[in-house]
Length: 337
Image (cartoon, rainbow, N blue to C red; front, side, top):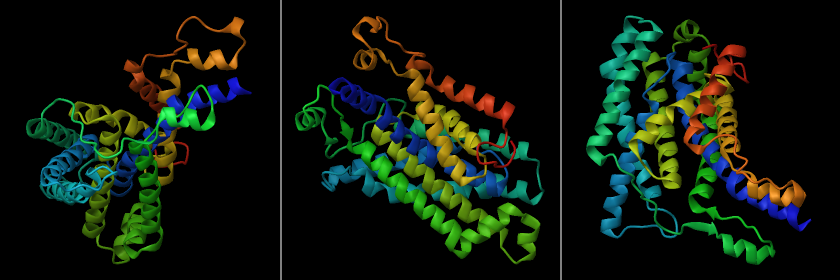
């Protein structure tokens, strides 16, 4: 029984808890992608760099607060800076919409035109973020690092293995629950949310009902910017900030949105956890875990790792391709890609 519990704690520490936190981050990112696709009918390839832009503003404001001696110890100071990041990112996406996408909506441009425009915007944002904050790793987390430390857990339980539960992981999971609950309440209960759903279901009928398309578009961009900033900040607090990493995150985020059902918010959440657990499960080295759960004579000599962590995004790509081939509408039957 002791070996079973030790194996379970080891698996929880290195697989279940990290995958849950990562899945929460992907779910928030995928929600932003799926909202834009559901309302504006195009795949926003600039979403990853929108996350990077919002996180960059949060980092800069956090640094300013730290210089002024403002903090909320034991929590990260970055939590105070998130509203400033959301405001700046919202302003940026609304300006981008006016300069880039508004004309295309007026002339009813093909979805591929919107997609190509978003790719162009992606490169502009990527270059801007690198110019402002640099290309290196940025660590901006302060306050208490752990909710419970590895040694404390071992001492408390008397086991050989423990769980180190980071503050960033706890914040990610808790924030994701709050944000998702608030988003679904907004979409289901408020007049603006109902207008968005009506516009997504049938644009022509919504217009005949007196719903303002520009107002719906504006609210969609505000929600997308908010989700992008929160997801980007939580990811940065947990794993550090590097602009190129956010560019790479576009693949698992889109994979999550498509796996769950593009245009379906519930599907985006489910897809986020499917992708996260798939990536972590395939790239985890099971050698030490198996020494607890199998007889000693069966203990493996190698790492028992299906894929190196360097190739974790390949897992997202394979899942994405399989879903597009066999179920293009995703788990929750969103809009066909």
